Length: 61
Image (cartoon, rainbow, N blue to C red; front, side, top):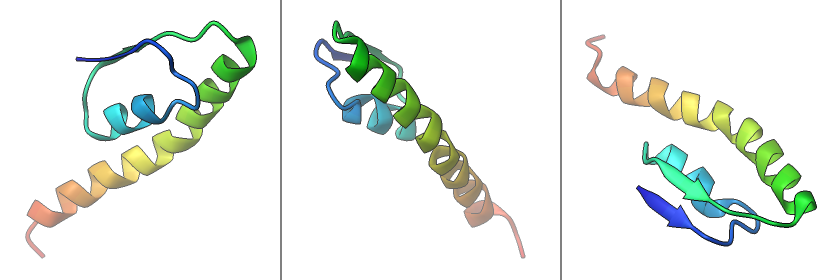
């Protein structure tokens, strides 16, 4: 579990998701919060691609 009391740009949240870690973050500025939500949505594609790569490494060809 990762705790980020000042989310800011959301980098800790993104890396936590990429490393398959749970996280809790706090942000009081709505503009930053909106940016973080958008960033996480965009990075979900990268996370899914990384999961696919992990599976491909262990799949026999």
